[in-house]
Every structure is written in structure tokens, then in C-alpha cells.
Image 1 (cartoon, each protein chain N blue to C red):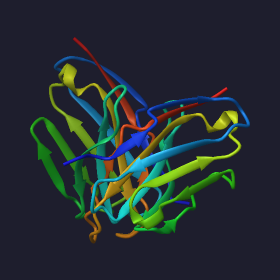
Image 2 (image 1 turned 90 degrees about the horizontal axis):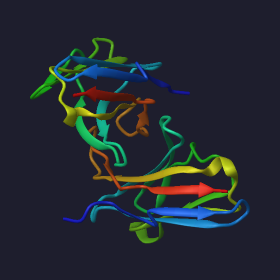
Image 3 (image 1 turned 180 degrees about the vertical axis):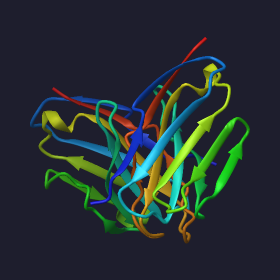
Length: 115
Length: 111
């Protein structure tokens, strides 16, 4: 069974440019999360999809970040325009639906560097 | 908002020594999970604790969930170099809430 896939694995862009990250969750997983880890700090929650609906987007930093999950399958996270503080590792995680039983499966992450 | 804290931030141990990381939440948790991230890798699920006072063991790892369901600990007996990595606790307030991660404890094992 394929795991959670993210690409690109690395992205280096200049301040002001646009970057789109993609996440393909494990097939059949309704829950999809985006997290960000900056400079070895905590894994910070960004948002949570249940199928195609945004369940919780309270962690999104500002309106420069836009996440979509069309059709409830893969998800994209667009940063436009990128700022220096957006640098970090963006992780996607997915899990099966289930009461109190959500084991998160993480992708390998996208290392974003904004110069 | 909900906060999850961990101590210590870093721990260096000699191979064979024991290691413990502590996790504390500002709110009562529905459950707590532990993840391990190897250097250059991604977080990998280790275990989930649900019941108050629950203790679970995985070989040399012992996980505990506090009676008040606000704190947890991970203890590794006789560390090995394969234990190197960052250990994160993660919790949620309700069963359907988002999973909030602590800052992690980075473990280094000196051979």
C-alpha cells in the first residue's frame, strides 16, 4: 500500500514568488492535515480536511496561504506571495475516519526555502 | 488556545542509559499520541493512550498517560543508537478535534 506522498520534496523560491505544494494521502483516508515545522521547533497545525471540506483551518497563518482538496482526494497548499518566514518543512498527514482512533500517517514533507 | 509542552528540549545520553521525556497539556486531553522523527525523516506513529492512568509498553519503551489526562511520559530503558531522533507527543481535546503536537525532545545517543 502506498503511503502519503508529497512533492516537491524541496523548493527554493524567492520572496514574492508563488509555490504550490501537493499531497496525495493514503487511499481511503478521509482526513488530511497540513502541518509545518520551522527550524526544529514544534510541528504546527495548519489545517484539517475531512474529505473535501475544511474542518478546521485555524492554524493557517494568513490569507497568503490557500489549501484545497478537490474531490476529497489529493490536496494542494499554495503560498502566494511567499515571505521569508514561510520557510520550513511542510508535512501532510492523513488518517482514516474513526472515533478516537486517528493514527496519523505522515508524508516525507516539502522543505520550502524562501530567499 | 490549547498548548502542549515537552521537556527536556534536548537530551544527550550515553548508550545504555535510560531516557525520559515529559509532555504536559494546558487542557485535558481525549487521547495522547507519541511519534518519532528520525533525523531527515518524517514523524512516525508510535502509540496512542486513551484511558486515564494508562501504561503501555513496547519493548524498551514505556508510555504513561496521567490520571488527569493532562500529562504523559515516554521512558526508554537502556538506550541504543537506533533510538536517536526527536520524540513528539501529540494530543487532542476531543475525539474530533485537531491533533496538537508538542515541541519535541531531541535525543542523542553517544556510543
